[in-house]
Length: 559
Image (cartoon, rainbow, N blue to C red; front, side, top):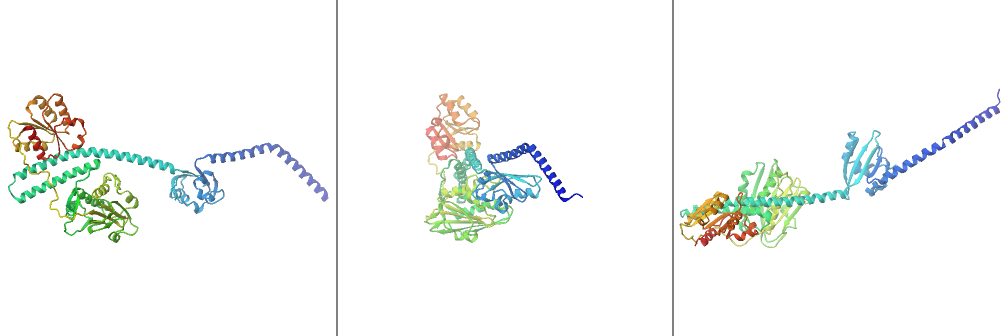
């Protein structure tokens, strides 16, 4: 039997042998182990260098939102959360704008691999985030501060918008000239033949009153043309004394057939003459725009509109109105334009609807040109801009209160006129005192592509015993002048005609030493006053044509 010492000795020998073998093996593998440790260290250094050189912030977390890796750029982007951006920390609720973002939550719920979204911080920073998730639920996200980029893009968009607005204004100006030309031709015929009718009617007061109404309507139409031009030329409107209560009633009567059944309208207007110095056509358009806005906002929902007024010796639009607060909450949004303080007699028109109301962003831009909450088919963005512009030009003020679900309350203040006034409209056709020199041999050539205007001028001359020939073709008119220059004592020619303009005809005949007096007519005469060729014209007559001016001019060249 082997004693205990012998066993211990053999065990010690085995341990010594094993240690020597281990030392030999370690010696053999030491170089390889060193290389491995070196490569690991080098890889970690490369990773840190790569993360530090990234422009974006880098965040690596596990499925429990424990931070596994982060770079310095992320801390730069979110300095207020630096204490939570360390390895081993848990994001939890401190990083709620990231982990609670709908796009991030949707990625987890739908088991998606990636998502992208933007974060807007309380300090107005905008961060672009892109997230990737692997099969082990390791989540990698990159974060980039794009606030400056957004600002640049916004400025570019504003510049583009201004350019588009300038282009739009140019188009409106061209359209206005075209519309003015066509409308003035129609208005000229209406006004001209109405003056004939008034001359020929028997001495019947009721008949003459009807003719006066036609003239008043045609004058309003003429003002409408000027208002179209106002958008591009910003000319001051012609103001006169009008009864504003009567004007509102007329506007509602005009609109009633086009007001849908879901809109009810209540007028709290005492039938009392209240006069203001205003342009009737523009004020009518103000109330049309307000009612149209309510109809469009209500869509198919029921909505009530009420219009009332107050008279006062002093109004301050800077103060909240007691009437407005009956309908609007204390925190209602409000905006204003024009004058705010009125220390003389004035009228305040109150317009209220219980429609959907407006959000703050809409209120902030409501008076801007081209701003609209509707698509291009429903809105032009000129409605409330036009309302504000008109009120300002009338030395008035406007204030709007609104809040979603509470509707809209509008106050319009205009200074009153205290003196009485019996006539609203002034006729452009004063009694004709001068008659043309009677000469049956007198020949006047009329050239105008619009037959209504041309025949009206011819009829006017005929009623004053002057012979004339009317041609509706500019080319034919030029041929007649060149073929028989001595036949014509006066030429009356429109400016804007197809193919050949009036000034082109004039320049052509003057180049042929034909010096026949040349009267040029135009619906937008101011535009051509800057043309150097206008010096060749003997007389410039605006459209709609004033009969007295036409007859005096013709008479001057016939005598």
